[in-house]
Image 1 (tube, rainbow, N blue to C red):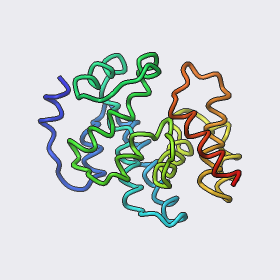
Image 2: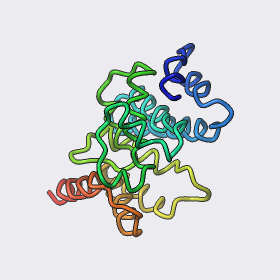
Image 3: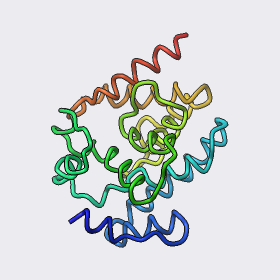
Image 4: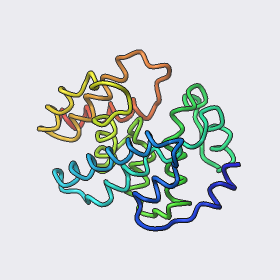
Length: 200
């Protein structure tokens, strides 16, 4: 089903228009969230001397796999040859970051590894995260897709005055101290790595 859908999708116009067409009316809220994350990521990239267009693309495409139902994500990932770990099998929602990378590359023809890497770890971050990884990760947490203001937002924004690393760590600490359903090893690795960087 999804293979046929992806093959049939044709790129026209600019990326934001393609994103909206890809999501359609059914996923309009995801498209809105993606545009908000993209705008935030672009601002952060300018602030931290990274490529704004790359950050914007990462934001626009980070949740592109939302079209795949949660209960089918593991099967689709396996069909596409994407490695799956135990934490993702327990909580299939998490694998959407890997699926989004695949769709960004295969359907939206994004070949820039800095963008693909940021998309792939925007939920959990990962070991040795780049500045671009952190920019898309942080933008997604600032412009979260739930109601109300994020409980960590004030602390995260304050930490941004110091560095991307400190801001990323604010969210990771919040996440890992909130008794998550599963603990993804990438998040733990990122937390350890960033803690070391900040302590140096």
